[in-house]
Image 1 (tube, rainbow, N blue to C red):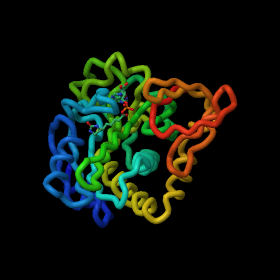
Image 2: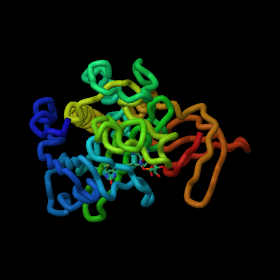
Image 3: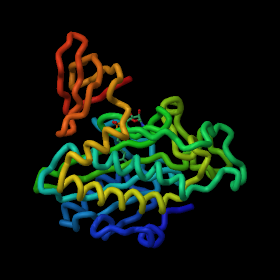
Image 4: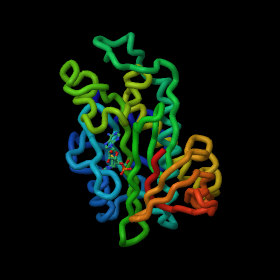
Length: 285
Ligand code: BT5
């Protein structure tokens, strides 16, 4: 099932997100393609989507595996009043909600030929957000967000990667029918996809429309009253209460995640009793 622009448009109910949409077979990174368009002064809400990426990236130059036919790789150009890190949380809430809702338009594995053997959970998946930018299903990473600013002007690029129909195993299953190559050895124990967890192959065009609709809703909410988004993020996250280790640059802290602050930072009760606020970094639990 390829990604179809007309199908996305049919389900889109946004005012400006996706009003300009570019869909490519393959790009190096949708964030770079979106950045180029932003530099040419494209409209706010322009969306770049690719079926695969040859240099998909995560934060700090890490790689984002982006096989063809399996995932959603898209970037949204925003021109907000203020360039703020909480935009990652806006995207996280939108992605989590759209995955939860995708169960309504997924296809049952029983309706498919050659279902993969390793489908684990036929019930509704447990979708949760892990601070600051991970989307987890049943405790494994199924998506990530890469928010980048453009130095000239108030432009932000919101990059979203979701493993949708990625197959559980590599090498290829049934000639790519189940989503290309599956996960690499490095990822197969810590990454997952919607299909692996639910047994449902999801139409990526519908999921993209759902995601963009929700993104616009939460982006507008955020500009009106940012606390609503933070509240929703807290509901969808299981980070609070976890014993965690945080890497913040060269420093490593250990403690318990207490809460998300209204500015999107994570509050941690350190092992020595002090409360520490972390605005960027990496956590393990
Ligand atoms: C992220 O970085 O999670 C942000 C990923 C953003 C990807 C999107 S796709 C569209 C847009 N264009 C781009 O070029 N990027 C964005 P980070 O928190 O740094 O996590 C990266 C780590 O996740 C890697 O080091 C791997 O361990 C793991 N990883 C890589 N590919 C993965 C995948 N497909 N699924 C799950 N985990 C993955």
